[in-house]
Amino acid sequence: MSALVKAISVEQLSPSPKSRIQFAWSHFQQVPNKSGCYVLATFSGDVMYVGQATSSIRDRFCAHLDTPEKRALGPIGAAYWFYYFLCDSNRVSSIERGWMNHAILETGKRPLLNKADAPT
Image 1 (cartoon, rainbow, N blue to C red):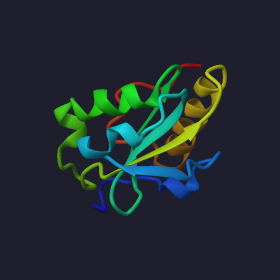
Image 2: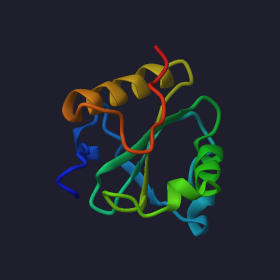
Image 3: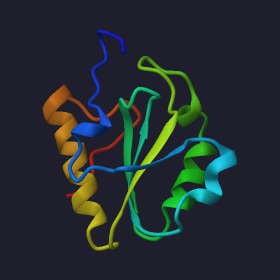
Image 4: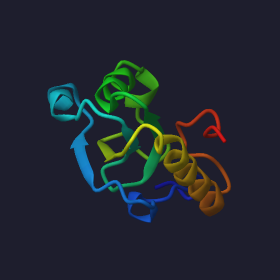
């Protein structure tokens, strides 16, 4: 990781997204078609993006794969893992907000690929 760009690791998130799949088209069908929160992370587990899906994290997985910026090599590496935490749709906003707030507290800013703060 670059000395100028700080990132938290997936292990620092609570609740911990223990499930993961390689962030590649060849694996999209293995991603559950359920609600939850997710993280795009480097091979070493540095958080690049946190997100939520109230209906299908598989749909979000595919949408991010269709976004060149989410697949590009950046200052801390490239997204290699898609970690996820399944939960009821009524909990996704609070979990994502907690992950985002934790990243901001630890690094002083949102994860590298998040352009906006989580909803309050």
